[in-house]
Image 1 (spheres, rainbow, N blue to C red):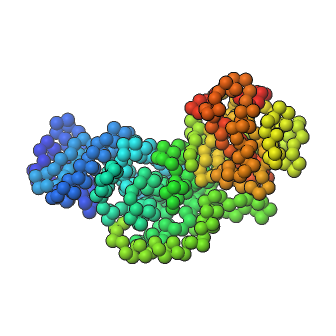
Image 2: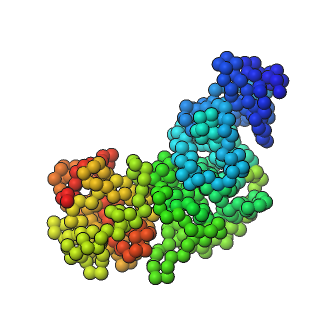
Image 3: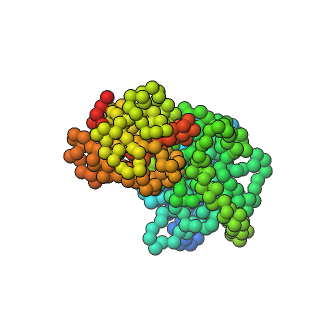
Length: 509
């Protein structure tokens, strides 16, 4: 292949790197600066205003983001004499993660998580610029000459603007990684990109896309129906990481992380030290001992509650597939990037020595597993809560809440920390749940974890901080600690935008 055949001066075309339905990518040398680049030439001619609009959007989107270390850089762009558009991109000699996945199979857990964090950061930058990628998949994540992963191909990028039509067609979406709403022809949103990234990380861990058969291919109708199936566990992947992926791949966009930043932070905070899943590739999770009563995770409960609509939903999606012509809550993370499962010593769901509990009598039939008291404890006055205070200050470095499941790190109150406990109480008899969202709605919990109780609980300098500057949260027991018999929750608070070395509610030990 010679540059003259393209009619493009300033570049020496060396070889064809790849060819798809819409473009050919060449390895070329940019003569002015002597560097090798990837030259992407579209196979379609910009014959009308709609085509030009699409190409300009692609160039603008990619150009805005090319400074990000995890986005493939754009060096130049234009239109050939025959009307075909081209882009000059950073050369990524390591190929794509799709190539590696096909040749080598599943990635290590640590590497897949790290890739997810970096691409989520790239997505955060894209969304901040008003850009949606719309086709995130292993084949669009490249490895550059420095071994860094970078998101490529903003060819489907949509830049939503009020009153403007999204001219990007849906025929080029990749079914295995597209969000369920794409098959309903819904308008694209940032939540769709989060789903696709979650599906990509899942595929890196699993060796193939979720619900994909080991051999053969699926029709579009089959793909759509399989989107309604529960997400199988991946053998060897820690539950905390699976929980993040399940939220990212939630069928309802409203149940996904609030933003790309939230997904990035949740991935970074997922505890990979936790016991790995022992599930088989069928997606059946290990059954707990018969003597242990463990409430189902919220995602499973949600499926069960909506079970009555499952058949009609599947039929409706199948009908859409037959008709459509398609080719295709808040997360607060610890700055350290780690989170406890609640089973470690000193965590909210810990198995701290029960001997310390004998120092202060506790509520009947309740094992708080920390030393508690009712003296100088405003929480104890809340009717029906049976609440107490910890004997000494109890501080936390960070809270991660994913689909109602909470993980939290215990912190030394002498070092900077955001959260501190101001009340502790048994789970209400009619609220035996580890779902933070459900627990926070319980009337007794709302009375206890309130600004009124917080205001009365403050000590020293904390009294000078305006009540409006405080944020209150509820920490239920973790699933592991609940299985171990812990039946208490905590009311915790932090000063907005501030970490402290003070003990705001109880004296230090």
